Image (cartoon, rainbow, N blue to C red; front, side):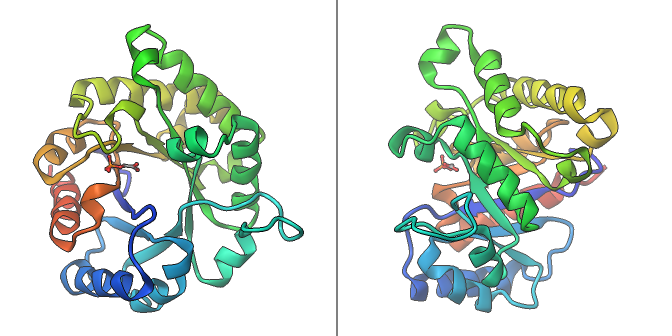
Length: 258
Ligand code: PGA
């Protein structure tokens, strides 16, 4: 960990009704609502954004969405825009999650348009990248990650690059209980920071948060967060219960200790 403010984001995926979301958010506020050393972001489904946003109002917790469309408005049944998310006081949006890429066929060009639209609307994109198991086994991890980062961030002005958060999520580790070892993750995180330096310069690259995601849990978080280029986590399963999510926030706060 470094001078970058660590970020722990909960990706609730398609879980929690508004009432359940409020219950979880209130439990988190009670336990880590004043935690200012760690940026905490809750990403409920669209239907719970408004209620969860109200439950965390005035606290250090921020609100994020799990997806959006790149267009501002129009005939796009079932979609929501960056402006609509801003209207609910969302500050972050997860883009290019591997489930969006694999189940819903999103490609790098579409994801790039969303990144640009999010930044335009002052929403911080959490751009997800990561390789499949077959790609890792074929020695293609860096190539796959490079293409996703470069295409995902194409056209991002250097002046806005610091608003971007990258989440490295090896697809084989998501929801499987398998995590990358800290050394494996650090290697890819350092590689990503090098890509950011090539595009935006070393100074800006040093300020961008790069999160790890994929079965991050209280029992493996300390070792991952101790790595120099791992600035937090994008948490799926372990974000659905207050206890495990709070433990992860505490791990991130602890990682700041000299
Ligand atoms: P997981 O999900 O923590 O359940 O592996 C992470 C993610 O998909 O963002």
